Length: 327
Image (cartoon, rainbow, N blue to C red; front, top):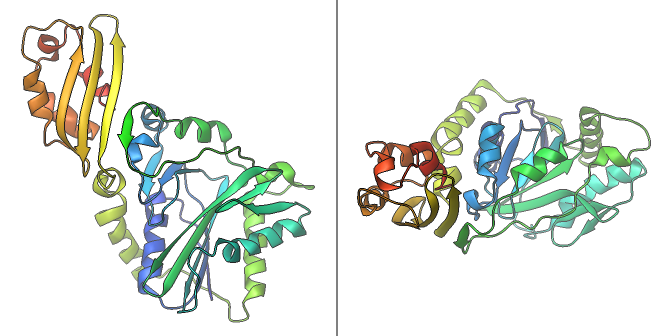
């Protein structure tokens, strides 16, 4: 068992590192890691329907898609993440209890009555502090989980507060739960890194063959290449979302009401319709046509319509207001 305690806090790097170790290593691995503020969406989710886009943009929160299924989660430096990667033909898929049991044992030592509940959650007094997910690649299982230790709950609530009326799709939806921080239940104060050390010591004692592993220069190079080609790209994090219909009604003081209706496939707008009680001097169908074939991405949409005088089509609406309406 290789024990890897990563000090990188870049979300792109940390998610890419998981795929790298899953695909390229044969030894069993245990990792502890933290991310700067980020939303990590499940493999099968529609990213835009899981996040509060305005809040994410304002707070400069990174959004990354992971390899595993399940719902979207919020990470910050008060959240500790753990990963098991193990090989063998005898693994039981979705054996969440096996991989979360060591965490429960550590908390029991601290006098906290933590429990495994539902499909994949760990709770204290019925409140969730850990969500878990798994994926299988060839004969290797990757299991990872979050551990809310001293996370900023305000950011968590706002960042994941999407408008459910905007989207119609078949993507997996996140289920919001009552949550709690582990630090609120400690009998004596401790910081997140001290807690991390306790888990690391416990795992090390569990596996007689455990050895510590530091990432090499070659590891860094290959992981960063995966960041460049996949984990930092719009195609993976947003464009990889399932097909969806987006609808938003926007009311403006000077242009009346606009209703945006777009069909999106593989992250690309296939059809756009814009309804409302606005006044126009030019045919809005020209804007709708310009949007077809454009990525449902703010920069791409802005570029596609920047050559038009939006006020000619939608009353006194500005370009910024028009673009904002599409997200």
